[in-house]
Length: 115
Length: 112
Image (cartoon, rainbow over all chains, first blue to last red; front, side, top):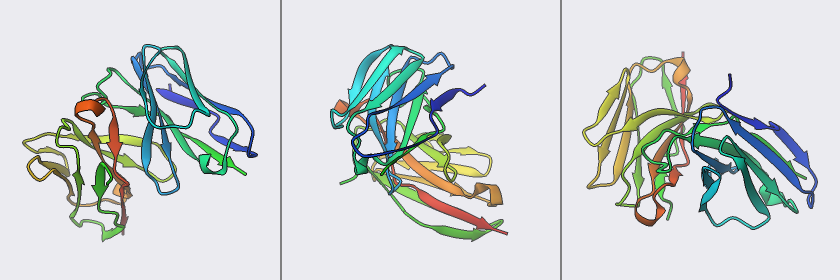
């Protein structure tokens, strides 16, 4: 069984469109994250939710809106896609909120290409 | 200034070689440190945590120098399967507690 799963794996879309990426974890973890890995390979946190509550919101354009219907799911909706949004988006989860002491488990990533 | 700065590499070494990576971090309040491994077009996976006293896991040894804010990873007897990108990861301290900061990664290729 996949511990952290994401759909879709690949997403190719036109500028200006709205798209969503879904993430699910079956590890029973309380905390979930969205990261963006750009073309220079930097992995940067975007958001974190603990038990459906937003706890980390880095400086991300408000075109990005995370939603956590329950603690096993964290979805990411992106409005008005721009060329610069092209990247690999990783979902992750961890047991606690510290982000430090607890190992984070990553999903396989969603490769988004905006044309 | 980046939170975590890493030797970019690439490192190309023969099987059996010993290779060392290092990184520095900027937040002196950071409390937790890790090395993650990321294979090409795959997700990052935890390789090992890094403890103050240094720690070893098989062929891998991690060291932490809090005074210099420096972390290292030593791989002995390199295998072909060690080829990957190694990410230095530090948790935020103080007001940024709960955030993990990733270095850009050091690419390692082990050749036969």
